[in-house]
Amino acid sequence: METFTERTLGHLFGLIGGALIMVGGAVAAAFGVADAILGHLFGAMNALGESTVLLVVGGLVLLFAYLGEHEWSARPVVSGVLLVILAVVSWGVLSLGMNVPALLGGIFALLAGALYLIEPTARAARMFATPG
Image 1: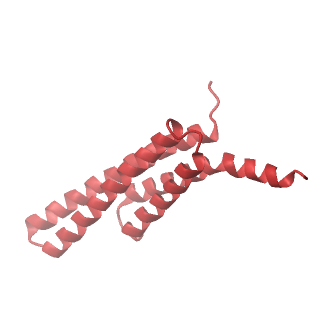
Image 2: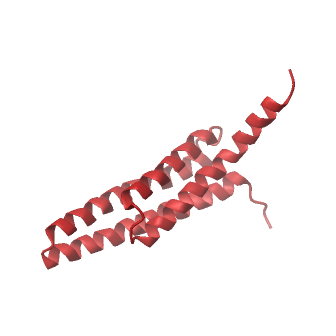
Image 3: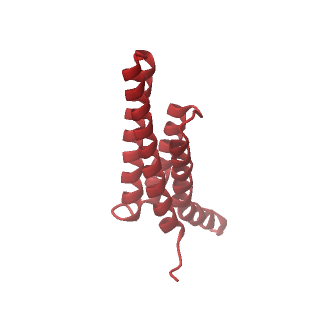
């Protein structure tokens, strides 16, 4: 069995997180359309706004998870920090609401960002720990 590095696991968690956030965006869109059909315009606008933000954030999580593993493999700090920021943004949009897939996606995105940051943090700690 292949051994997983922190970056590989972070890539996998980032893809899962981005997909879950996008599923949460689709769920919010469905509720927005249902609210619009029922005549609840403020609820529909709220849900469709949430849906738009979640779909964009989910797409960005997928993009940075991909870039962190492939094109930006020499710069895991950038991908890690951006994934952590996107996880916080998704939680800010949801404000711990009822959209469970998006909440789980935010958790996976946060874990992906943290996993991307393990290697550079350990390297920096070794650099500061060595005398001279």
